[in-house]
Length: 202
Ligand SMILES: [Zn+2]
Image 1 (cartoon, helix red, strand yellow):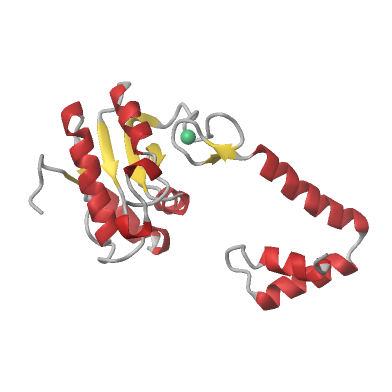
Image 2 (cartoon, rainbow, N blue to C red):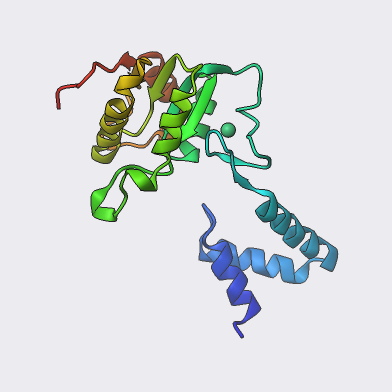
């Protein structure tokens, strides 16, 4: 049996922003705290893990079949912003510039890493657009080689739908990540989005 302190430290280190030192501090804090506080922490974690699942519509982590964004009547359901991952959505939300809905791909096309179209939520996007009610698809994959290739794939995939496709403007540096861009840069990139021409020159 693994030492319970080492087990917790190893688990904590998988969390964003938690390194070895902080993980050990947290483990010691739990050990020296009350039994109630420790059980509350483990119970809260277990409860969230049991109840969290991807939103059926957009793929973001949700507590119900559909997430709070998809079920918010104040959001503009006619615009779907396609992002690589959940933190990119959070960055766009922080910009305060966007009131539409989202679609999380779960990554980017990367043949070398074995990520093809089937590994991403692309079929779900196609079905969502086909179902109607969408008047703009804003492609907000990151300005990396894979992000651009994925944007081009989506543009091609949805070209027959007739729904206007837009791409976030540059401003986020080439090779950069929306997740780490400041909110003003994200807001500018959203405001400056442009239409994707059919069969864009590569
Ligand atoms: Zn959703």
